[in-house]
Image (cartoon, rainbow, N blue to C red; front, side, top):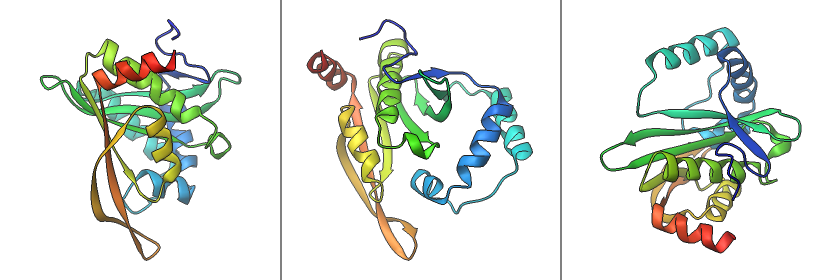
Length: 189
């Protein structure tokens, strides 16, 4: 395991200027497949200006229950996505994680899994979390495989959660406990 907290094999986690993130999110959200795999809400088109205002407001409010990073490739230092902990419950040592790889050419090549491994390491070792949870649509088998590769286990299913193109998809609930993550780390060595 690397000693650099924010650097993996393919990506690094970083902080990003709101202007850069706004431009990237505006572009990514115009990709209907990306948005539909990421969110159950109806896609909305926001201008880069409006998105920048949202990011700046988010930075001002900076809740202690939300921590996010941008994802950049190591080779080209290219911004390709984001990863975040949300709804952190400090007393219970629990958080939800969300990730999105917005640049399609980096899908299914290990970049998301690498970023998730970094985020889990950060959550378990630096934030002292005991549990990390996520939700993923059954329409996104690539993401499910990626989370399984990181050690997440299936914990539940909410049937017919999301309607897309006239078809209902389930919401799969997955989680990983610190002790499971530690065991998984030993197997990786």
